Amino acid sequence: MKTVDSIADTANIIALGQRNLPSRDQYDTAMRDIFARRYYTNQGPLAREFEARLQRFLDARHVICVTNPTIGLMMAFDAAGIRGSALVPATGHPGLRHALNWCGIEAMACDVDIATAHLRVDHASSLLGTHKATALIGSGLSDDAAALSRLGESHGIPVLFESLQAFAAREPGSGSRVAGQIEVFAFGLDDIVYAGGGACVATDDDVLAARLRNIRSSYGAGAPVPVEKTSNGRMSEAQAVLGLLGLDRYAERRAHNSVLFETYRERLNAVDGVRVIEPGRATASNYQSLVCEIVAQEYGFSRDELIVKLAANGVESRPAFADLTAGNDAGAFAGAAWINASWLALPLGAHLDVADVGRICDLIASISAMRDSKGGVSA
Image (cartoon, rainbow, N blue to C red; front, side, top):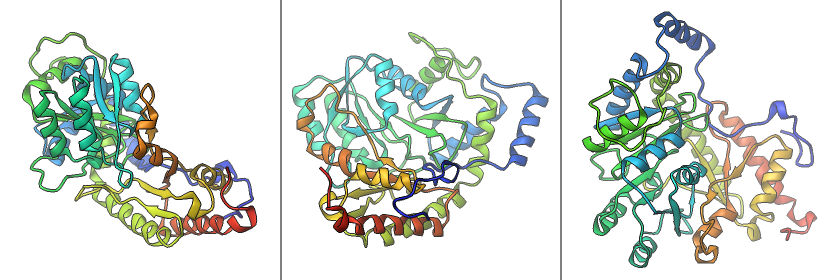
C-alpha cells in the first residue's frame, strides 16, 4: 500500500463493485454455443432458463428478465399504472431518479432513519396524509416491506421496491422474497450476480406479470394483454448465460463477501469516527456492499476528504447513495442530509481478499492519525 501522500497508479486501483466475471474459457464456450444456435435475443432458450432458475431462487411466481435496471424500473412503473407523483426514499440508487424522469413521474422524497437509512414509515404516513401520491416506492430491505405494504394498502396505492442492490436478500418472516407488488433487481458489475448489466422484475401477481411481459415486448412469452406502450427491453442470450454462470457461484461468492465484510467490521469499528453499517433487516444478506459512516469531528476528516485521500492511494470509494431530494425542501430531511454527507462505500468483491481489506483498513486508520498534524477537520 502506498503512503497517504502518494498518487495512485490507475492500473493498480482497488476498484468498487463485485466484478463477478466468469473465466475466459467459460465465456468462450458459452458464446460459441450461442452462435451455433444462431438465436441471440427475443426470449431465447438461455433467457427462459435464467428466468426459470430465478423464479425458484427467489421463491417468486414470476420473474421477467430485462436488458438493464432502468428499463426494468420503467416497465414496473408503467405496469402498476403509476402517474403523477410517487413517494420515494430521500437516499437511493441514481437509477431510480432516471427511471422516474423517463416516465414523467415526480419524485416526492421521504426522509430516512439517520442511523440505518431505513425509509421512515412515520414520515411516509404523514406525507401521504397531506400529499397525493400514486405509489410508494421502497428500496430493498433497507425498508420495512411489511409496514410499507400495509401503508400503501391503507391509501389504496401500489407499493414497489427498487432492490437493485438487494438480490436474494430476505426480510424476517417473509413467505416470499418478492417485496411489495413488484421488485426490481440488478445484475451489473456492482452486483453479486453479473448478467452483462441486465436486471429482472419479480412479482407474485399474474396480471402484473402479463403486463410486464407485454410491455417488455417479447413475442410468444405469454398471452397478449392490452398495454399502452411497449419497450425493447428483452435480455440477450449473451447476458442470460452470464447470469446463469453467476447463479452457479452465488453461494461461494456470498460466503467470500461475508468474510470480507466481517474483516471490515472488526477493523473499521475500532477506528474513532468510523462505523460499519449493518445489512439492514435482511436475514440473508448478499453482503455485496460495504458501507461505513464517517463522523468527521471524531475521525479527523470529512467523508469527501477521505474519498480524495483514498483515491490518491489507489482505493476507489464513493458516497453510498444518491440524493433524491431534488425539487423538495432539502431542509426537511435531517436523516438523508446526514447520510448523504457521511456514508461511504468501499471496495468489496471477488477481486479482493482479506489481505486487501486489511490494507484498506490500515490506510483509513493511518489517514485518521494524520489529523493532529493536518489541523483536524477541514471546513
